[in-house]
Length: 138
Image (tube, rainbow, N blue to C red; front, side, top):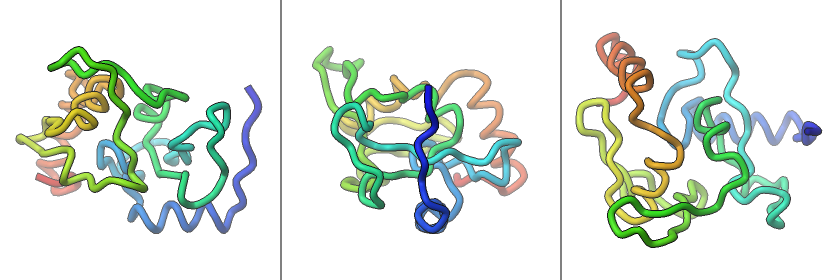
């Protein structure tokens, strides 16, 4: 797989716009051993462009789990639904924190929670530790 060149100025804009937090799970990049990658919300293979309006800061786990997917099945309805789009939708409208568990409030939120595997035991334990040290919202 080839690495897509994203100009440094665009990387900086995406990172600053997100305040250094994954735009999917809210994990701050200072709290991981890896710099958060830049996610093409709509992947290049689906016609997405390398422009600010199509880029989001994503932690490594969210980025790997999302891949080039645009949709998945809503675990509540079984319907195929699009994933949350951080450039077009508000996080607070589609997700809520219950402790450190991220809950999908809408079809987009539920689909994203499921596909990006927000609430695995390891991810919950990580967020709990960070929250206890005032490093994670909640």
